[in-house]
Image (cartoon, rainbow over all chains, first blue to last red; front, side, top):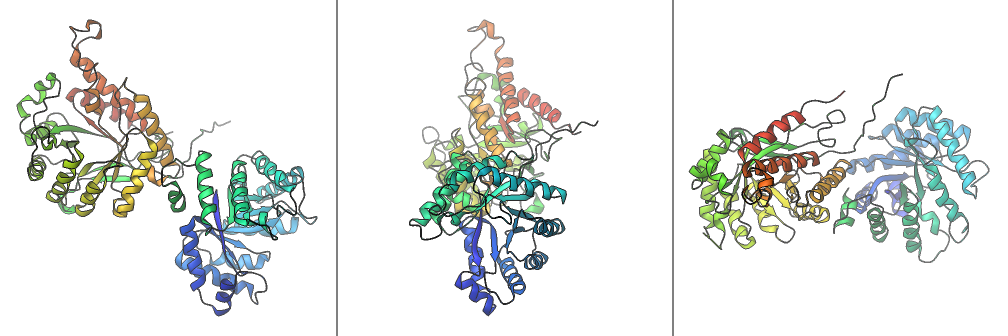
Length: 263
Length: 325
């Protein structure tokens, strides 16, 4: 499973301050730290309430690229902000994200084509997040088919089946896993899958980290390819590295956790 | 309707390791040898790159090899006591592309030669031939750990391939390679997990050895577990092609040493009339074993019998012919 490091996000105070003071230090520290932790993409999110989100996005990207060559995952619901960001990315990026809604898909898939970007597609639409796997799959197929119409191959697409906190919507869990399995059957090559890992434990759940890493390995066993997650959570990373061994995705050696972080 | 040929696309490739150094590169070799670099499984030229052909090294000892089958007297008997002449004969008459010098004289159980004497033998062989050199210890860890630093120092600039590092004994030889700029053989006992771990341990000591490790996964002779070695090597190579950097190194196998220990290569025709003439049987055993390992992706074969070397080299030539379409 690929870890998309979640920490460069204006919702955290240090990043918020970095943006307002135009001081890249905290951003760059997290860029390096997340890579060392095992992240292979870095999520970039200006956070809520930014006065000038386009400039903030450019600032975060440029600060990050000065110290890291990891591909970036541009995280915003404002597609003008994403577009500004894509213009300054050195490597092909990932767009985070688009729901299965026609006008938004039109905008995002056009951008993705223009900038050779990967896209996270959300299994939801104007009506919200469906509960059962069949409805999630219907939206996933809509995303795959629309992307194809824009000339974007399914393997450039990461479908997020959408995860809800396990105390609020316990009955969604099995539906998410079923969706992860079924998505691999919709096309050849199939789309990839991603989740926002910490969503499973939001809202005052005890043992958050335990819940996150348990969900991570269960989702991996159901075929999950990537997660937006805390690359600084050593036990999470160790659990993911171990799951990769058990799933025969990496060859075992005594230092397999270090190897996972480095590769 | 045109037929689309399915081709596997791999994420990564095997790293390249260069043996030897010419005078421009600070050594005295007349040529260098590059191992590895494949971006596909062995000899699938239609699918990826196989930029460097597998190479055949011949084995020379720095003392008369009393344990070798007598039939080798016919080829090396006149040079057994002189490793420089022996090496020269392998290169000039038998077509060795690399010389493997085993410092057997260091063995404390027999001649117990000093590290300085061993280093002197290495220098003599370097003077006698222009091909790159592999230098192996006598197999006694304690002694080899004294010998290798001296050898490394005496041959600084020559970009030797020194062996062997093992999981429980890798620090002294790794230091010798780091300090004097040589390549290192990382040997594991037919165990892919240890193979990978040992590469990590060596690289933890020195990132400078990143393109200087050759994996010795330990080869077995035909009939003695060849399928185990083969499957380990195949798995390591698939891992390398799929992006496992800790397995993306070229490989070496001591084919001759393993084959000429077997009963098939040693029991006389008188004892086993149905098995046919001993020498032909032995050399074919060696050549057949080599061929199997070529299909596993081996990059460097260490061999003994001149005729087996000849057969293997001609086979390599055939395998390297372009089959892309």
